[in-house]
Length: 544
Image 1 (tube, rainbow, N blue to C red):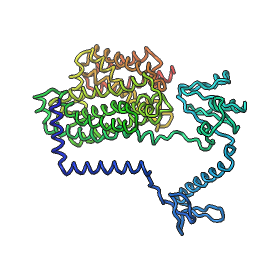
Image 2: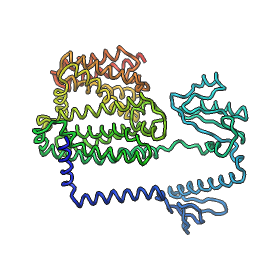
Image 3: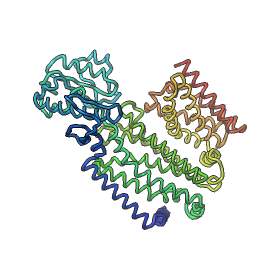
Image 4: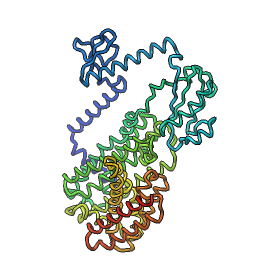
């Protein structure tokens, strides 16, 4: 493996000669310099973009005889244009802030008789309204306790009521007395620093958090593209077949991947050191491995540069969405913890992480990466690599991989990770449909995904025993997700609240695929998908 890695490094040196290497180093140096300058001086992309007729102590405004906004006799005049309206908003914010500073300087603490402290809670830690009513004297039970305000009796009562009125993720504490104290300590500028006027409450900035997450993964996109390009070139020029005569498949794949994988890990470690979160790079490893494994598998099943380019782009986009979009809803739904990026952001912010969340998230991504690596090595076969359609290649890979009923059970059990990923995309897609079509469309998508995955495994040897073992393995995989509370929010669509019904369904459709396989794969899958969709819809409509 090390010899192949050394050969890959030499090959990359030849591909990227002295001139190309110099340009790469120059581009990296310029990017690093600009990034450092942006951090030190700030980004002034909006400097001087608006004009006004008076001098304003604001960098976004300059004086002009034909201004975007004009001030005359304490009145603000704007034009009917987006630029003028945006300039007016910017100027009003500035004037409001200046007025606030002047009032606070003159009146001090009395400038804001009502102040609010916001504490962000886990959705599972919200106290139901009935419980709050019964335990009025107790603060809500959260990871960080919110102490009652001492001073006015109605103040603490309003705090508890406000806590239950806020939507799902925030608890709000208000005080109307200028001498309010927290934890029976006198109010000081330091202890009161967390209190702000109600109009200044802002949700945590998502953009900054996502930028931090991208810093860990973005360098890997460049290295994985170089790796997939090199692997595709060797495959189409049949160099891989020559190398296979001397070394094993795993040594070949991992040897070619090793230099690029190490470069990706080093970049993630560098970001961790820069952020003083020395273990943060560990959360990027599952995503990076999934990227490399997916690119390897796509290259192995592609027949041309054009087909590989399209598939590589699509796969990279889907993995990016799957890794980063759940982090957007990290404070809203428990499902977001399936992504290591969500846990990465929580770790950087110093939040406590549950061992079960870490185990499920890492296992979910690593299982998919392992299976794609395994299937990619099986596809490294002259009979599979060239000439056949992708669906035929998948069936051939299944025949080489699933060699027994026990193997069918294991692969079906592990393939629930791919099913869950595809079904999550289905959930996102059906939201754009009219409400009356959402449930039927979602159930149909679920049926297509699950029967396709089971069908590929059963087609390795279409017998009744292979179908039953596949169905049982897939069923147990679903129940594992239910056990970890991943599908709790969507238990209706996935029939998660039932035990016998999903098992009967999976066995029935698996047997259908096994019996119909001789008449054609398309007919077998089509009939199984139809039975699955009709069965799901009937159960959801009649029993739920």
